[in-house]
Image (cartoon, rainbow, N blue to C red; front, side):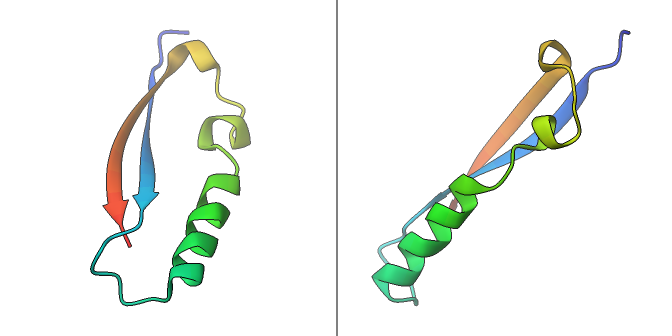
Amino acid sequence: MNTSFFLGRRSVVISSKSQLPLWQDKLFIAMTKNAAETAGFFHLPPGRVVEMGSQVSV
């Protein structure tokens, strides 16, 4: 019961230099936000999960 789980989390934002139309950017971001959380998907105990995040521009 001493195990810690390290998970990665990405936050997607719209870039001013995006190659896609605005509606596609917004759709992709909405789909990303609606995806299941990793800890919940694998039934990891919330007290032993460490999330490390990064911000990605599309």
